[in-house]
Amino acid sequence: MLRRFLRAILVGPEAPQIRRFFVVGAAAAGFQTALLGTLVEWGNVQYLIAAVLSIETTIILQYGVNNRWTFYDSRHDGWREYGRGLLRTNLVRGSAIPIQVGVLYALVSAVTIPYLVANGVGIVVSGVYRYVLDSRWTWQG
Image 1 (cartoon, rainbow, N blue to C red):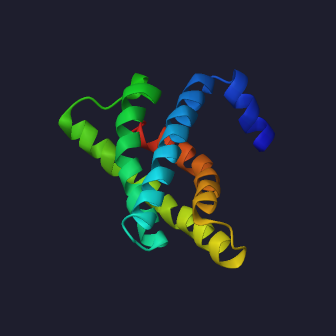
Image 2 (tube, rainbow, N blue to C red):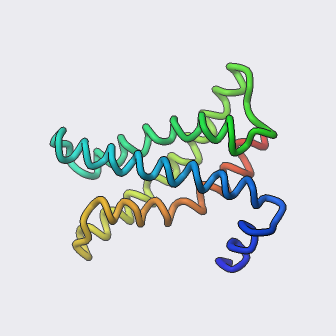
Image 3 (tube, rainbow, N blue to C red):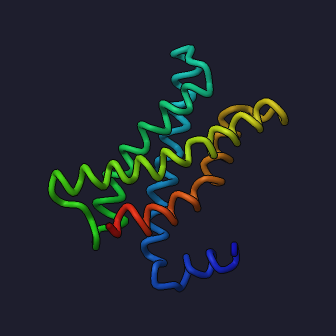
């Protein structure tokens, strides 16, 4: 599966789209991690609550960028279509929140990895799941 995914990134018909999704995701991961650290360290918000808040913030930001750039061929233009797409991506990415937060919690509590590093692992673990659902449902309906 990993080999097929890596080949798809390089030469498959969805290669440009997958690469754009990855770039947007990497930028969002950096933003999300910075927001998480800010909420925990400066805002004194518990790290799991801060994770959910930072994830939801990046869901909204990523949708806008992905809609405009990654999935420009099937982008949502009107307010109704844009709103429906935003709802769909929230359902997709919202369903990934337990995956990401679960990985975060498990790594912090069981393995004692720092929460910002554990958050990065959670982002990667849930990333493939999010791409498959977003590309097949959010921008296809």
